[in-house]
Amino acid sequence: MKVSVAILIVLMTAAMARAQTNEPALDVDVGGMLDAAQQFAQENLDDDVLQALGEVDRDQVENFLNRYEEFLQGDYVLDLTQLKGAANTALPLLEAHEETQPYAAWLRARLDYFDVAEELKTNAPSPQPVPGTNPPPVQMNPSFAAEQEIWIKKVSPRPWPKGAEKFVPKLKSIFTAERVPDELVWLAEVESGFDTRARSPAGALGMFQIMPATAKDLGLSLWPLDQRKQVEPSARAAAKYLRQLHQQFGDWRLAVAAYNCGPGTVQRVLQRYKTKNYAGIATRLPAEAQLYVPKVEATIQKREGRALQKLNVD
Image (cartoon, rainbow, N blue to C red; front, side, top):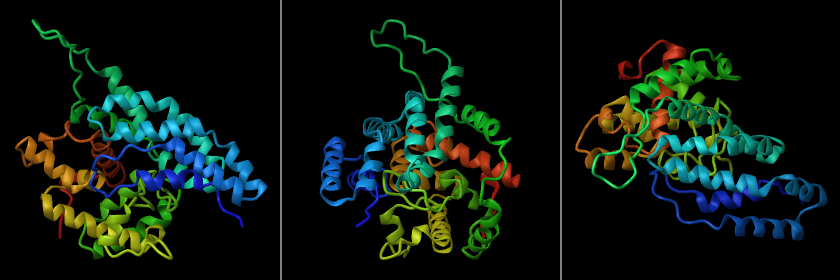
């Protein structure tokens, strides 16, 4: 029986997966799961699979995945700079084996988060102590405008991703049929680089990185064939979900933020800060969402010459 080295990360995924509401994950004994995977492999797998499993640097991949999940759910964007080296180390380890390449596709689409966070940190003013207080000064998140500026520079020289020419016309027709602005098909570039194999450690899958619970709510089948990996069903589900989120929030920035971190999270932050617009929560969302929204905006502006906030709604 030929079972893939993906067992190593599938076990991690099963424990780390959560509904797409951005609720805090439970503490996970990743090392214990990796040991269990290794023991299972020794008892059940053939020699060449064992060799591939042994070639994966467990410590480095485990360390990166654990810290990345933690930092993305944190509030502070600049903390991501601490993970740049680990991400660059983990990527070739994941790319080296066919079984773990879906995770590499997911990570590859996010490597620029670390570059942008690093540039934001370089440009950030030093926090100033408050006179008469003992606690150290608190570093504030970069402004939405500062992130926009860097993302525009980052995205502007990029050619179309591999596969985009093949997929974009079909995706646009699907989004149009679902009464969603067809420019939003470029979420697939941000989510996966148009790679249908992309899989996140949290359980999101496919070109549009749809979580299992969301997929079921949108009518996608997960078994025996996972429709999240199929272009047309996943695109239709993503478009339907975006339409629902825009109907809920009445704003494309808020809808895109909710696509990333979940509508429950966005609603709670809006209520906490007593606002109804994205500007009021732009620096208060989870770190990944703070980076995600301006990246989506810059990508749509580059590919379509349209501003996210000015997209037409049918």
